[in-house]
Image 1 (spheres, rainbow, N blue to C red):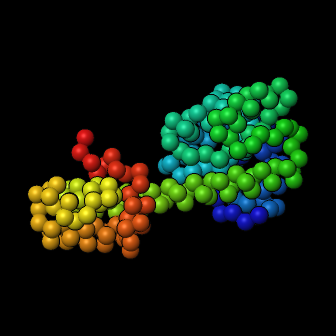
Image 2 (tube, rainbow, N blue to C red):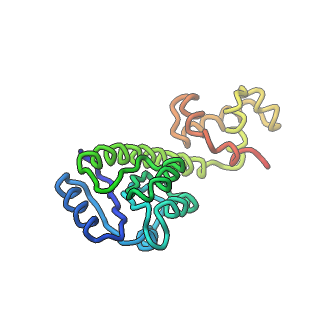
Image 3 (cartoon, rainbow, N blue to C red):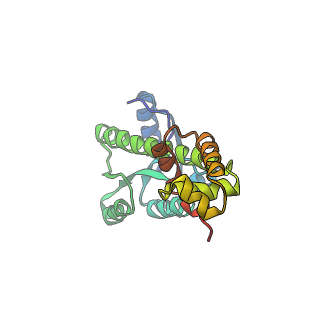
Amino acid sequence: MKHDAIVYVIDDDAAIRDALSVLLETCGLRYRTFGSAEDFLGSLKDTTPVCAVVDVGLPGLSGLELQQQLSSREIPSSLVVMTGRGNVPMAVEAMRAGAVHFIEKPIDPKTLLEVLDEALLRRDAVAEQSARRRQNQARIDRLTPREREVLALIVDGHMNKVIAGRLGISTRTAEHHRAHIMAKMEAPTLSHLIRNTQGFLNLLRPA
């Protein structure tokens, strides 16, 4: 198991935090532990995706409420929920809300590591997707207002002549805009340009 992301362990039971710390360290995983959801949330400085092992029955904010808080802050989360017998319904609810797995206490180390590997892979995929989105946002921010208008028409499938007629410019000017857009968006082909623009069309078209 090789991952660079931090695994957060959130449980009010110090013995469980210590046991999981030893397990994660033995496996070469980076980790941080917290005794409450509030302390964990207070440590987060940005919206970087997180992977965490969380006790669903935490005092104060519960594991389910923590999951809701992460969602409201738009922090992607990949959670493994720990539960005692009495909290299974709450854990099932957490699964329905997007948790990766729930495991019952006492925790079997092999099972935890298996589901944690899946959770970390999902977290890494989300982090990569978020990074691509930030890169594409930065590229779009480099476009002029006119280039954004042209880009919106390009992704709608219009040729240069049609774009020129729509915007009241010459075909030659439309061609120049297209070339500048392809360069700024770092798109070698039209298909790359369309992929890089997905999810941003609301920023390109007038309200």
